[in-house]
Image (cartoon, rainbow, N blue to C red):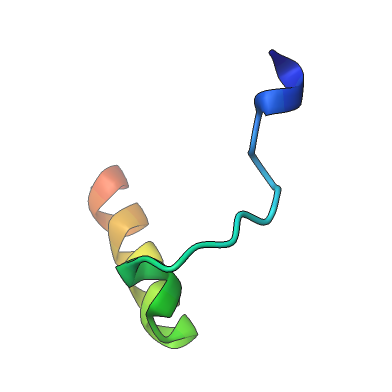
Length: 38
């Protein structure tokens, strides 16, 4: 069970999020955290 845990592991993919600009991912992550704790 523990060997299937993927936290902190690189998972290659070709989704919308994988193709997104790193700056956009950072901004979206910060906005998500802000909304989550607001």
